[in-house]
Image (cartoon, rainbow, N blue to C red; front, side, top):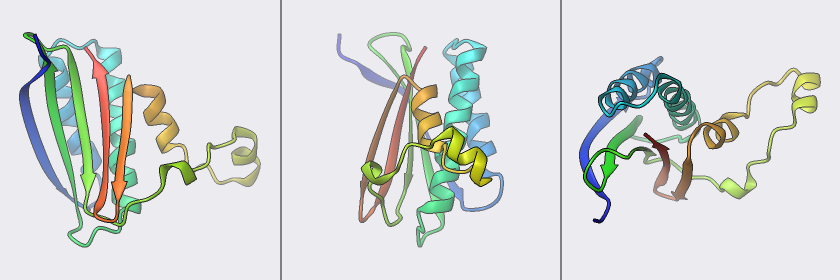
Length: 143
């Protein structure tokens, strides 16, 4: 049987302080509903927070919104949670984002720049779709 979207929820978040935390609460509730383990839920929440912060800080979206879509996916029963974090901003080149170096970061005092690395480490699948009309980060966590 083919994979299907069993349930979908979309949030439109204004670019305001702590909106990423609201998205993470929704992620936790949906992940709990599909019986995802607490450790995996924590990983989803952290990855989502990072993706939202990146969109909030770097998109320069004129509409000042970030859209988060949660999809419960499976052939018959929930198998995974897919999360899309989208903005209508300026886009970026993921291949131009340099991998952070721990020693350099510690010696420089600049501890920023770990978001994409963390997201990739926490989620089972990550895809970045970007262009002049915005960016969508697609993250998947198996149940």
